[in-house]
Length: 182
Image (tube, rainbow, N blue to C red; front, side, top):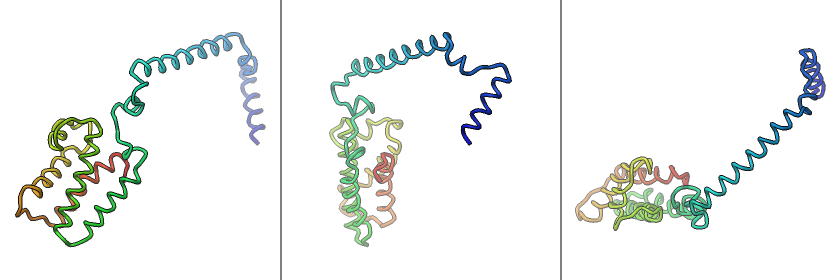
């Protein structure tokens, strides 16, 4: 069936006065193929030289991606998922103290990831302030969630409902979803 269609196509081109076999074997096409082959080799060499100039010998991950992304966000996602599952288990209870612990644990996980991504600062708040909105998609959500975490830590009489806790956990979860961990 396919061969018949190919033969029909060749017959059609011959009827138009175009001999595809002759074109394929022509000197001009051979020269064009040769020049394109050289061009591809030059492009490949340029790419290799640019990677060497940029410092490929250093950290390959940061060279290729443009920033140092912790392995938990790329190749070791299952370890991070297990930690996150424990946080989600705490959220299934009706205990306000479990909600607070879940938020603190989630904040610690995200803070550790952001710190290892190379953002500087003495604490998470300083690191979040130093991040441009274009670098991390839901940075404003993370700032608000971290504010709740700070209130949990610093205000003894801070009350937290399950709905509030779920919204805060969702902010941290969105960060992990952005990196396709969850």
